Image 1 (cartoon, rainbow, N blue to C red):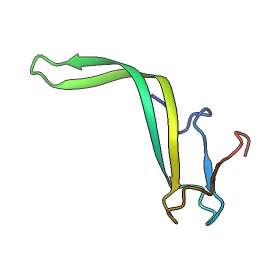
Image 2 (spheres, one colour; image 1 turned 180 degrees about the horizontal axis):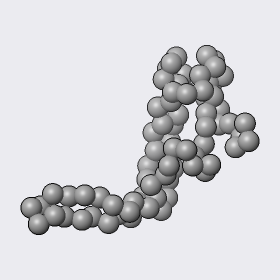
Image 3 (cartoon, rainbow, N blue to C red; image 1 turned 120 degrees about the vertical axis):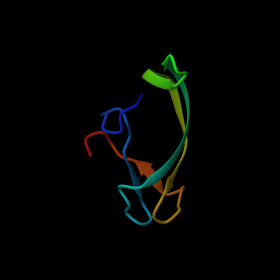
Image 4 (cartoon, rainbow, N blue to C red; image 1 turned 60 degrees about the vertical axis):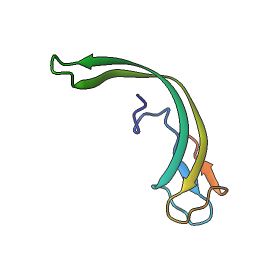
Length: 76
């Protein structure tokens, strides 16, 4: 699964209010995961690999704006 601290996970900035920390991200993911059921029937999902991910929308949580959100360069 994608780690929020991973360098490949984009960071965003709202150009309207300056927010750098709170965003609603809508995405579609295709994953492969190991489903491990206990003898009692309880499911534990392990080893989730993201095979494909499409970011559909990013909206600022502070001001609700989705049009002024920009992706920051990895070195920013």
